[in-house]
Length: 309
Image: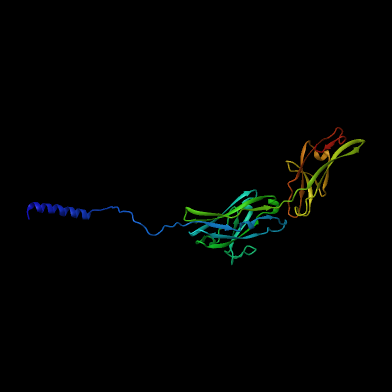
């Protein structure tokens, strides 16, 4: 073998040794391939029913505990993906979310008992402001599965403390696949309110006069009709309240009261005639009326109070 061929062979050996000992990479392309299988997409959908049964007006006596309103809520995974559930609540109105207690537990045989179960770990309790944790069996559902979640609400305050307040509530079960994919299932909105006695009705003002030392003194009699049965409680009485101060000017256990200048004191004076009952501890918003008058010129002589024109 001549020297030229030996030199060429040597260079080739060195190149192959260097290539074998170094990192190597490669890339290539291929034509498109037809796939015979049809592609499918999973769906995330869910429903929540039964929430409308939680609608109520709380009305219980001063020394009694709040009634408990129980409703079976049916949650169904109507999609094709397994879902992990969370519960949320939204309120619109005047009744604070923190004033309504909420308890949750799983139905037995699809039936919810009438009271919140007390066994350890059976029910979870919170408020509509700080929701209780979902029971373990209600935290997830496979496609086409459903379960019955029992929900119970009660008023966490007295009727007197929350009288006349009301809010519309929407509970929503949200099912999630991972962290980005979710399906919200709001239940039907329901209203929860707190009883307040109704106002009296038919407020009238009648001018009256009396003689003092041969001189006329005028005053007025305010009369009204008591709230009707079913709109109030027992132990009715009435208050004539200065507005907007809220101080009581006169009280009465009957459906009328006389107002003298000594009662009124200032002119004009805006007043509210309110009904108060002791059964539930509430007071009505009040019927408005404005009276005028003056102190006269000789003490009580010639003083007068006038009805509205």
